[in-house]
Image (cartoon, rainbow, N blue to C red; front, side, top):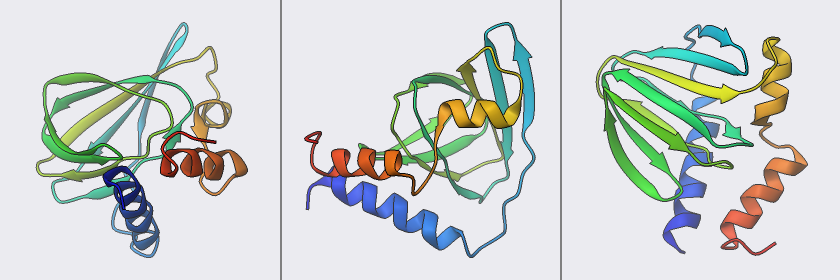
Length: 142
């Protein structure tokens, strides 16, 4: 099994395992500017979360803290202050090594959170999600 397929399976398995554990339910802080939306989460040390798959590239800012981030490409450590771009169609598993402040910025004219989520997130288990995962597992071949 190639590394990418193994990481995809590991992240999806972790997400499924975490569904039964309700130890992280952090409220997000939402900020809007013309054409942009920012969502900030405070991740307590020791928390483990699996993020959603996004349709578009977006900016991430870690203001403080340190995390290990597992994606399809492998695992890397990020710490504050860092700014980076996430590509589309990626789910990530994040372990907070320290209390961490993570902000995600999406380009959108929307201010309704439900509409923003529908616009930027590929819903787990949807046909679109399953198609993206299958494409990733097959090495980019549809």
